[in-house]
Length: 135
Image: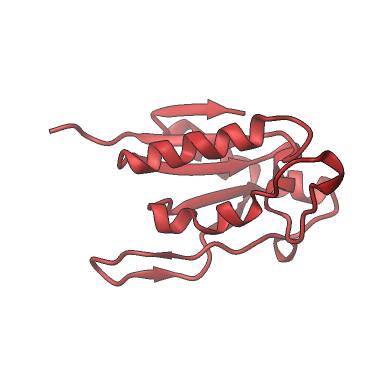
C-alpha cells in the first residue's frame, strides 16, 4: 500500500504577472488528489496570493483567489504565512482570506487553516517536510 508523504509548497512570488502562483495551485490540487499530506507556505511577495479582494484585471489574468478558499475541501489542512513577509508589506492576518477545513469522517472542523508563523517556525515546517516545491 502506498504511503503518503509530507509535501510543502513554498510560494514566494506575487499572484499575478507570472504563471508561478497558478502553477503552484495546480500542483497543490494534484498532490491533494493523490492523498498526500499537503501544506502551503507563503513568503516574500507570495503573501499577496492570499490578500482579500485581489483584482487581477490589469494583469489580464483570471482571479483564482476563490480556489484557495476551496483547498480545505481537497484535504489541505495547513496554509502558513511568513509573518516577517507580511509585516514588510504592511499587511496583517486580517488582510488575508480565511480557509475552512472539515473532516467528513470525524466531523472535526477548523474555521481557518491560514496560520501566520515566525521565521523559526517557518524553517522548522520546511525542514519537517519530505518534499518541498518552491514557486
